[in-house]
Amino acid sequence: MDTAANIIAVIGQVSSKLEHNVWHHDFPGYYRQSVIYRFCNNLPQYEGWVGVILATGILTKSQGDLDVPEGGTSNWVHRALDSVNTAVEAQDQWDDRTVTGVAGLLQALLCYDVRPRSSHIRLLLRVLSIPGDISQNAARILLRDNTLGWYQDKELQPMLQTAAIWSSIARVALELEDPSVIKPCIRIGHALARLPAWHSYFRGELCAWITTFFRAEEWMLSEDYSSVLSIIWHPDTVQYDFSDDSETALGLTFAVLSKAWRDVSTDMVIALLRCTSWAVLRREYPVTSNEWPRFRYITLHPRFEFSFSAPLRESLIQAASRARNELLKAPPENIAPLTSRVAIMEDLARNIPKLSDPEKDETYYWKNLRLQFDREIAVLEEVV
Image (cartoon, rainbow, N blue to C red):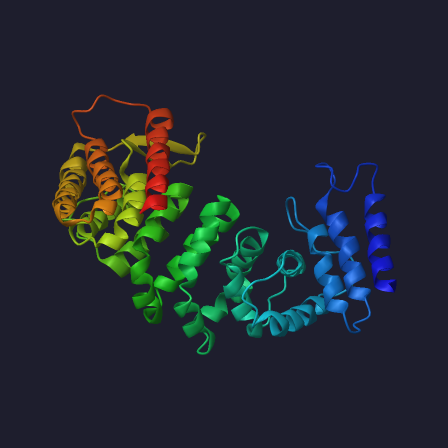
């Protein structure tokens, strides 16, 4: 009962902190977090204390920038995670309070800017598959500089590799569409690609790597992106003389995709369709500038169309032709989704820009076309 009273008192304290209600959009999140965190720090760690900590998770959700809480230490966060780690390891399903509570604990680590213990790694890997704040907080933690050593740790590295850690983080990053998450996601991919021990694990992440870069439009990181393509997938650029980092990123992508479509397996078609549509449906590409505007757009050169666009178009047409032939052997219940898949492949090949095409606006036409294909592929993914 005393614990319940304490929680009620904290909620009342938070609610009266400012003239606005605590949940009002103008209410600074760090006020709420600091009050709750001081309460958690001072809570006697008797039997049942972790349950109280988990109950506060719903109160500490961040609405913006993270601030270091005033007063207290972060020791209570690690102790609570130790207890949760032991208690829920054998549970197949977590209740809502556990999910929001663990999300709150991970949020606290981010606010205090402290690293979780290495013993918490299994917990972090598990929550990456749970939608919402909990996986987003875990991804942010795993992308911070203070956890980068885990990727080279002899004991932790195999666990991270088996869990396909980079693609899991990339999935969360794309769901967030937050540059503060996507940028370190690309940077850590670049760091992993430079470690030979990660090459075999990263090789299966081609679609995720391309989709992450082109959906995020992080052209300032073109050099890091292209470096990974070269190290892991060795694209043949037919000795093309690229004019800038952005054109290099596009050319290497087209070359890698051409090979991927020649060798595509059935289970990879949807992922390959998605990354191809995000990468190739464009007539222009941005180049960074020291003047305003920050980017200036350059139209793809005729040599680029001959060296990269045409071979990719041909690879995609051939893949669609092979898939159409497979329809003849497909069971009746699979014909409709397979037909839709072939139609998208053929439509995508037709829409890869040609020199003879009339000019279309990048901002409206090509961006909307990429979004249209993404929606069609998402529908296909649900029925296949």
